[in-house]
Image (cartoon, rainbow, N blue to C red; front, side):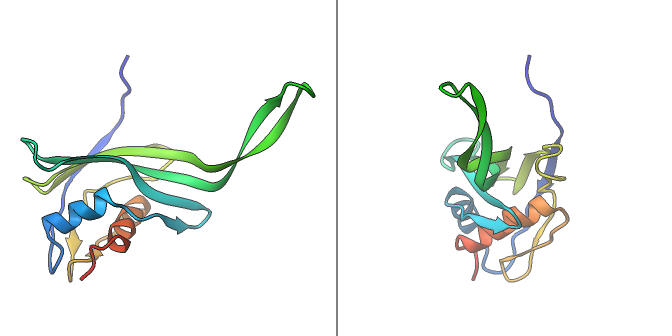
Length: 149
């Protein structure tokens, strides 16, 4: 049985020096940000700009730089805490359709709060309207990776 979820749809409006190519380049080559105790980046990117229809697909990943997991120590027959660097906390898939400047984004309940890319890009090609925290993270990743003037 397939997984179910709520996808948000939106349109990206680019102003200033931010154009289609720079936006897609920034998604494909995303920076990694630290916000609070978590790190954020875009992973598993599929760049199909030359396909028909053209699209860029990826996952927004929220992860812990120093995650901890419980593992079984078979010699001591006990549970032990182990360090798990870059432990994935949540991941949400999205697709950007440049022909329509459209984006579809999966809301991940209790992992990436109110994930929605249905807001607009505004001002000088780099400022984004931020409605939800995850939107702000994606925006900052894109800005840090070179979509600034």
